[in-house]
Amino acid sequence: MTNVQVFPDAEELGETLAQRIVSGIDQARAAGKRYLLGCPGGRSPRTTYTALAAAVRRMQLDLRHVVIVMMDDYVVQVGNEHRRINPGEHCSVERFAREQIMTPLNAATGAGMGIPIDSLWMPDPRDPEAYDARLGTAGGIDLFILASGDSDRHVAFNPPGSSRESTTRIIELAESTRRDNLGTFPRFNGLDDVPHLGISVGIATIANNSHEAVLVAPGESKRTAVERIVAAKDYDPSWPASVLACCRQGWLFADLESAPSAQFAHMP
Image 1 (tube, rainbow, N blue to C red):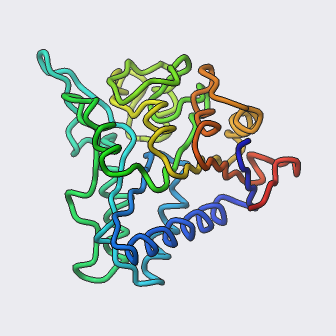
Image 2 (cartoon, one colour):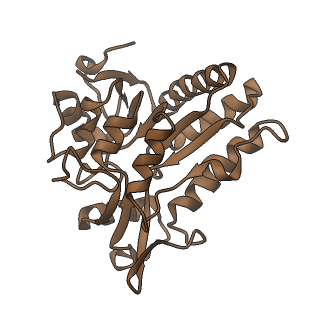
Image 3 (cartoon, helix red, strand yellow):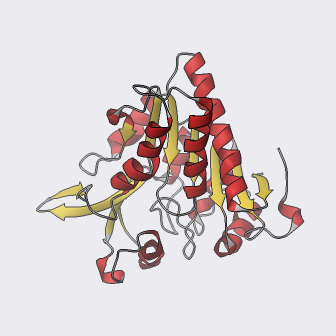
């Protein structure tokens, strides 16, 4: 059964998750270990990222042992080779990670105590399988933040029908996923501008490598996702975000807009 917590709003959701993350970061530092934080791009986790930077500043945390593990990115084909899009592009997930996650965190901590530049991990479309191997060798992801697509219930770029055993791979993006991403990256002029290919962690990548996973689902547009994820007893290929049910410690964080019914409020 997925653990569910419902918050008054997206801001309190983000603050609570941020506190859980900074606690893990601090514990890992004290133990002399790295802390791997799995992160999606997009809108759903933004209050978490904002609250995380504020908590780092307040606690004056040392982040030199933190690794940011991104889930996916857009891909282009150049000749016979696949490459991630240029990180200067407005829709680059690498750019999102640097501008929306790493830069605020490093600005919030003390000089020389930020996340090293090589501690931003991205999957490489030239060798997708190496990403799963790297995560396994590192001991897995301490906490993986997840999000669900509004219209087609994708998680990362995994579309409906994705196998439970899928690993990091190049994916032909579903049109519904591409439409969702028009809202994530508002500088797209229309659907034709959204890339057709992506590289993404797989369902097994998430389930097998996460010590803890928290799916954030704030806002009215996530109501159906919340209902389906709460009802899932196991992974349902028609709803890839149901991978949460397979994670060792799976949490669904919703708010009163996405989960207005009190039946969903199972507090930790």
